[in-house]
Length: 92
Image (cartoon, rainbow, N blue to C red; front, side, top):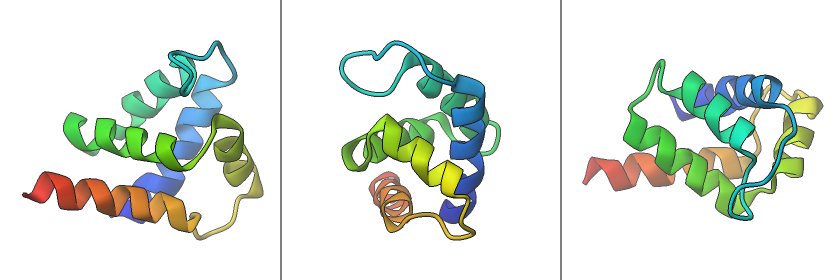
């Protein structure tokens, strides 16, 4: 499940979001909005917010773009770790 969020939703967010102004030194508003729009179609808002925040702890926006452009079948380990951290946190 986490891997499905990682690859598909991130790709959607990056394509939909494009580049934009940074908000609070984190991801651009466009990336955040695009990610949340895609993620909440199949996940809870709480999970999606947590997942995006966890990705922000592990990757810069440029690194996320590079991972999507790389297009490997397996998402980077940090994507999986971020999703698992949220799944664990929200399971409590």
